[in-house]
Image (cartoon, rainbow, N blue to C red; front, side, top):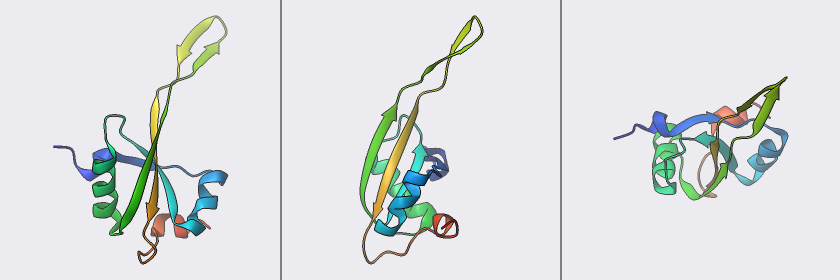
Length: 97
C-alpha cells in the first residue's frame, strides 16, 4: 500500500500552472503508476481539501545529447487537480502568487 506522499511527488511551478490558481486548479507531478482515484485521495489527505476532478497527463522522456553520448530524460506524469468551489485553497500555491 502506497502512502499519499509516495503518490504526490512535487508541485509543478510554472507560469501556466500558476494561471489556474484563480480557477482552483493545481498541478502536481505524481507517481507514474498511480491512478486518478489514488491521486484524489492523496491530495485530500495531505492538504485537507475537497477535490472535484483529476486530469492526468503522461509525458514521455526526451532524447538528450551531450556530444556524442545520447541519453534519455525520465518519463513523468502530471495531474491537474480541480477543487470544489466551497473548498479552501492549497496554501503551498497561495503563498507564491
